[in-house]
Length: 351
Image 1 (cartoon, one colour):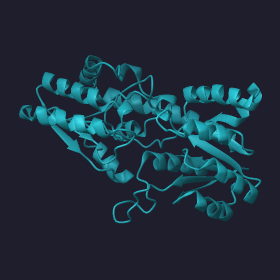
Image 2 (cartoon, one colour; image 1 turned 30 degrees about the horizontal axis):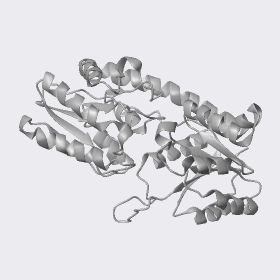
Image 3 (spheres, one colour; image 1 turned 180 degrees about the vertical axis):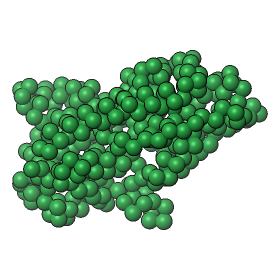
Image 4 (tube, one colour; image 1 turned 120 degrees about the horizontal axis):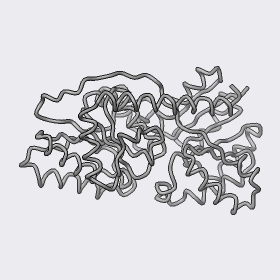
């Protein structure tokens, strides 16, 4: 029977006065916690720890004595594993990658480190998206001259899980404003600008003032120009009554409460592997317009072309007309996806 340990890196700007005790009110922490809890529910022993840096990994591996240690995301220098493998020769190290190739291309060291990891004994690379898994297999098969069998042993698929707890809500169409969210870290591939313009166009067409909600507290991967342009757009049109509403990142329960106040959520992003923010919205009964080519559980009938404001506006109208159908079909689709996830993890770890 497997004994699993998840290890995450604490955010570099951790402040005990501002952040949670683990220092990670982020999608990465939530993702790992969901999977840790799911394994426990399937009678697989599992633990989760957050560390300041990779020099603290040994402490918790010694404490929990796992058979598999899952490092969430690419942050441990490859040289560190030579030390860890000597200290813990029976542990299998699983480096879990959370990004599609277009997003990972923005991390300068990513492919060098993945190549170095792949050459280490007892290291497995776990990818949470099928396309990215195939991309990495092509790269590492050539880099290491692996056979197909070797490649499949070293590069595995471990998708995301999400707890199946849902609520419903009634869309208030009588008010003179509409609250549309585009939550998530501010970065280019999140496509905030086009979604904001589509939301403005939709609000005009239904004769309401737009309140466009974002998480401006997290700017990542050259996201500075995005938030600058986003603020400029709403400053330039402030005479029309449309408003940009900035929210700092907040603990999960508080974020869910915020999600529940939205009328519609937008996640027409250009690159995704799972999209926890979208799952948070539909878990609260909020209709969602996503991108079914990127979000694996998104419902195609309520998905839009992320390069077309016209397409997004059309799906905003559809979701505004049928909010319950949107939320319920998304909840059903997410349940099916996460049922399959639970089977994959349980099979891999011997549950």
